[in-house]
Image (cartoon, rainbow, N blue to C red):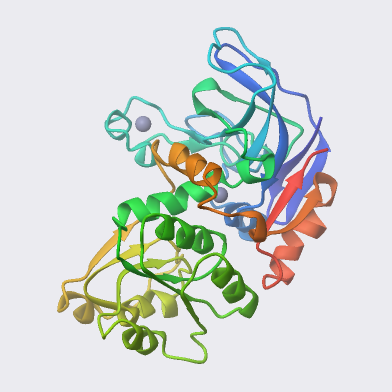
Length: 352
Ligand SMILES: [Zn+2]
Ligand SMILES: [Zn+2]
């Protein structure tokens, strides 16, 4: 079969590889769509960060070259022995974590903190391929009205769901979302579904601000032109946001959380800064603000994400900037995202 394998930095290849077959308790899926994630892009541009390049991953025993891609949907093509809940022809998406299920954190359901965690598409073969084989317990059936395109958004949507769960976003909240990339736009919609009253989105790119308005933002701000904190104060009787979801992860936006949030606010950190950031801690402490962090998702978020898509509360269609073939993934996928980030939001890849 054809697959995209990561060999090294700026060295990914669409090549012929052996077609995998399912063992005991495993399911073979014919991939329909796989989204390009920021992680895939980072591994291409400046990796290896998480991909085991020099020695095998301790849990999976796998190392580069590896098939990447972890945001996917597909149709079940074959099932291994002892698979009981999934059948050939089922339309599915996949929870891509491979935790050990044995450690202290796994026994408490905190799979994202597993001491031996690995992830499909990073430390095991992923879904930029015609077929992928996964454990049955990782497979979720798509509701009838959730298309394969929508199914490929369940994984990033799970991150947005976790952000809102960790931030305890609820009825009447005044929520500010900083950064309207894929996760920010999904978090906006989940916060709205959770009952947030005012939804402020802070984003420098005009096309993304437009999209945010279309997807439920009550107000959008360009932080290069206005002081978002002051604008939000005007719209909230000086209370400012009581929940802030930071999805950009750069020093300027991490500090912006202080001015857009009010007293006793909760700041939810989703964006990742690879370098240390200077942060005005006194302004944070004197107003008894709280910070919570989000790393992926655990086991609860996938079912919630699926129901938000099925109910129409989360709309992903306008976020799809292009649908491409696997053969074109380097030029029309990775390079397009690097050279033209304003025009590209989520790119879906089909192996067909
Ligand atoms: Zn991802
Ligand atoms: Zn574990």
